[in-house]
Image (cartoon, rainbow, N blue to C red; front, side):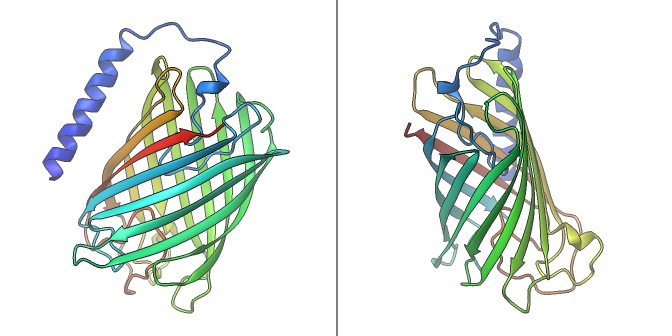
Amino acid sequence: MKKTLYLVLSLVLSGVAAMAQNAGPINPTGNFKMAAPQPFLFSVNTLTGSSPYWSLNYSGSYGERTLTPFGYDGVDQQLAVKGYLGNQFTLYANAALGFARDGGTTSAQQAELMHDFIGGKQLFGPRIGLSLGGSRDWTNVKSIFSRVTASFDAASWRFAGNLRFEKAFDKSRDGIDLITSLGFHHRIIGNFYAGAEAVGEDLEGFWEADEAEGGAKLLIGPSVNYIPSGSRFGFSICGGPIIYATHSNVVPSEAVRDLSTLSQNGYTVRAQVSFNLH
């Protein structure tokens, strides 16, 4: 399965390189109707008045050697809603359902409100914001979190990054969890973008031997986003190896994590379909 994953990713990158040689001219003014409401799989970007106002996003993922009590060693499904509320405010909420290999199922939910303090009035240019949200993880542990969001959109490329601080209301968890993510896309042709995404979770594991979620985890892999011309649908895919950078001496918890807690290195692939309601 691992060889198959790498073969698929290699074919995607080969296709991207071939199309790059025949890329058409870039429209310097862009087209807000074709803007992606959620182009990245691991970084959340804010919306603007020039972006699609409301969208539904369905994603599914598969991973191996990601054994955890909440079912990421297999398949999980997620449905999210994202919308622009005006005055530089963005709402993002999702619910996830995980299917364990032993036949069990678990669920988790979270919601947050983001506000751009720098930029956020136009699609192109920099945006820096802050969010406040809450979540319920797979074992019914509640958490509050805050996310620093940064993004930059141009006619031919886009960037998004998050720095998330999370406080779980459970004595077995860390005082504060730290999660970072970065994504970069470059326009290849038309509304086809390709690039890479990187994620670092529970990074306090680099300096805390008793990090409660099992240690620091890293992922980096290719990322693709495509919106067919004139369509309300958008498609994204990202995947790659998950590296367990450090190993905690504490039994991992069941906090909500995009990269599941690993006993050894593994991999994950996530695909998403977005539907623009505006």
